[in-house]
Length: 124
Image: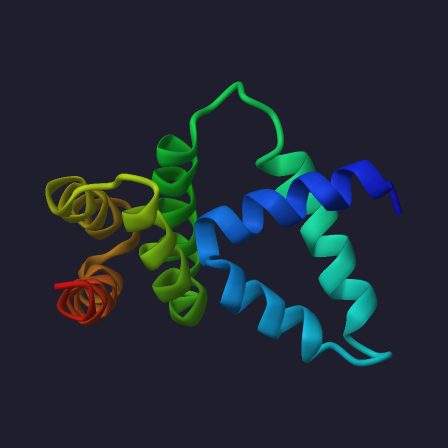
């Protein structure tokens, strides 16, 4: 594994998801899951988030759209928190959910809306 990509990824991952959450994920990894945690940190966060071509707010908005389209609500909730931390506003979050509804269907948008409401209520 590229050590620089891992270190960059670790920094980006902690900045968006929170140092405590990331450390808990890494500490909870065992011999079976540790290679995936390390590769995901290097690839997704180091390679995918590690350049400055797209700002973190825009990346968060893109992630919410894609993860919402996939219907992966546990990840959507996690990235919703990160998006808010990265500057995505309530209005932008609502607009993202509207687009998910248009392109992925109303039931999926409703799932995203429920999850967003939960996250927004927690951040009050």
